[in-house]
Amino acid sequence: MTGILEGNDLQAISNYIKSGKCKNITLMLGAGVSTAAGIPDFRSPGTGLYVGNFANLARLNLPYPEAVFEINFFSSNPVPFYTLANELYPGKFRPTLTHAFIRLLSEHSLLSMCFTQNIDTLERRVGVPENKIVEAHGSFASQRCIKCGTPFDSAKIKEMVLNFSKDKVVPRCEQKGCRGLVKHDIVFFGEALPKAFGQAPGYIRNSDLLIVIGTSLTVHPFASLAEIAPDTCPRVLINMETVGSFGEREDDVILLDKCDKVIKDLCKELGWEEELVKIWEET
Ligand code: CNA
Image (cartoon, rainbow, N blue to C red; front, side, top):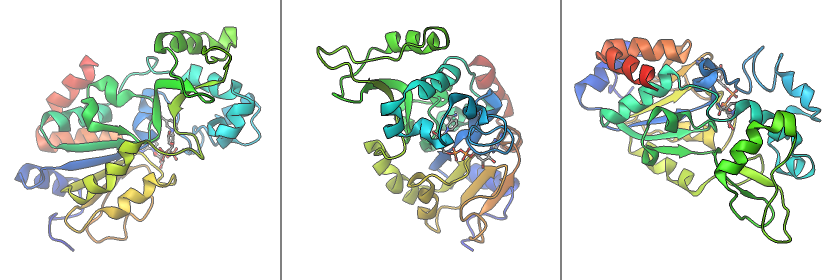
């Protein structure tokens, strides 16, 4: 026990933040942060893209669900990805209270860095400064040809994706003689993570608190970051289930509930509830 937190509950986190000793908070986020916005995660029973009803992905005629995010499969059949992109495209969804909390941490100068696995860009949309976000699995924010690497126009691809359900036109490179498939800069299975992800261990080692929200901690190397937190950096998990190695450290705080509810309760304790709701209502 490090003695940094006075307990393993929400009150203890709130007291620590209010004490002024907790100056740098690093966040690790997953798809659970955006489920309340209407974007299904991968693995929640009944609603996740990989399970239950949203086998949903079954209508895309995939050999197995993960194929939709595999580069080899995409190269031979990009239609399932673009069908899904049409449904999940940024602009169709509003940030959640948890996204508003990220901005609030930043406004209180407490946000060290937000490492997100999400590709929905809702962290940007809620107004978290770009230099405080690392989209570890990329995002829909940019795109390029998978053959020659030439970037593709954002406005043009947006129109194509939004019309994909009726037009079924897959974007192709416009460089002379190329015609390669265009893919968003989302990290597919088998692709390298963005360079900025390399900074993650340094941020976590220098943090006073690590908060992990809405992730099954099953996708590596992202998931392994939670192991890096030193004794001086207590770990908090806000999720529907216990995941990873949470619970193995005496000072781990595990808050099992919908993240928006936990965040609202935490902000109430911190006296930030009004600010939180104001940010959320504005976005
Ligand atoms: P996952 O494996 O589907 O796990 C989600 C986790 O969140 C589960 O443990 C759930 O119990 C939990 N959860 C779901 N809803 C809530 C909620 N309201 N409050 C608290 N916890 C909740 O997803 P991961 O993010 O762990 O997997 C990594 C993949 C998912 C990344 O590569 C992403 O790109 C990918 N993904 C992203 C999005 C998005 O951008 N919104 C959507 C779907 C998948």
